[in-house]
Image 1: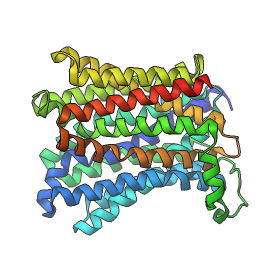
Image 2: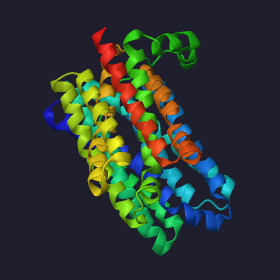
Image 3: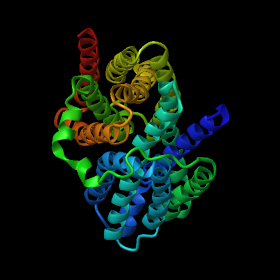
Image 4: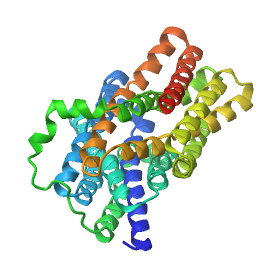
Length: 386
């Protein structure tokens, strides 16, 4: 591979991640419109969205198995194409049960991308951390623009066009990926897929000493990130007494910081070490979440955005660390299993933060997140010293 082709693959993988992230985030801003139009409750539509995110986490492991059998290119095309089709089906769902089915399938298909693209980049680049950081930045970038675009379209034209716009984003990326990315050789084209689901080898993989500590860190960090993504605007409105518009601006700034920090942390993991970059992110995240709840006025919120946004971008370093610990033949299914494990556990962050806020108030809920970042930092330090 020459320089031009490698970077074409990287840019298109980032674009594919942008599409799969955009499609999921475009739904939340128009939830009130969906509730009114389909005559359902917030609780019921919350269940549908939870199903989407759970399906996203669960599909990470099978995505690696599919890539080992059919090659990464085909799986990424399925992820982007399937996400695009499901966005259209979601937008034109005639009744709520069809909406729920489309939302779950959207999460399932979108979840096929990330682990497979990371594996592809590990085969393409020597500086894996930097490449993964650039690729991962596609998610926060979508988080920066998708809610704004969906809300603007939803207010003017309704929730269906707001969700359907994801297809307009997805089609060009799908065509470009199919045109410019060459077919990839599968690692295990002849192995029966049933063999890859045996419980014993799966448990052995995720409990290896070199994987267990970073897996615990990833679980704690993902829980915090999911909680912040779900409730940061609400926290700013109810605890900091911001207006909804101002809270939205701060939330966008949080995603903006995350977009740049993904690349920075990935590069640091290549230049220093994986553990140093992860520890730096966890420490910054701990200080940032404390600043949100205890910092003075606008300075406290600004510090929270910068530090918590930086800390929430630890994925580019920790995913590279997982890749380092996995053999080349294990990276497809192995990394997919790791992603499923920490994504599914971390998805509880939305429920956990909401429950803590209801029971104990927003201050305690955010202090818990700071404590989890601190605990993750402690695990990194102890594991590095072994």
